[in-house]
Length: 192
Image 1: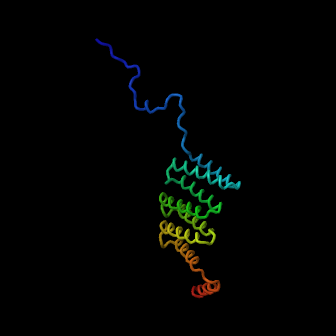
Image 2: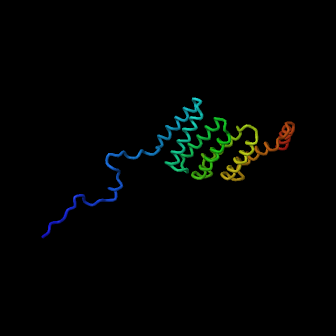
Image 3: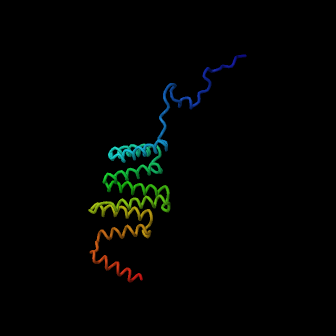
């Protein structure tokens, strides 16, 4: 009777071939929430020291890493992009800052829904930044972009959209100061 044949290595499973070579280091871990938080704290420290270009560069790197790790539609990525908008506004680049804020608001509504308080807060941050834009052609153009995004998120009849539309109208057709006083008086009389 022949003896059974025993193979020296046994059966090789696919996991064997997928394993790294002995002695090689495992791949570095991805961007963890703690690492992200530490990076944003460092960004804030750099910005507070008055080194806004360095803070913006670090925020851009964190944004790239967060997007690679979590994807664009993740709250961590959105928060980093809001930080980028804030840094741009601090540096006086209101158009870029507002663009980041509007982008973040659109991402937030996609994952959180239009009724979420964070979406409302993101839209209000964008509105507040737009109000800080110095008078000029950019202000009207950025206001139109803000109105479009706010309408898409909150609907044409929302109080916020009505307020933004009213502010844009005031900028487009400024009333003489005497007309403002009489309009206020008429509103009081008519509303009494």
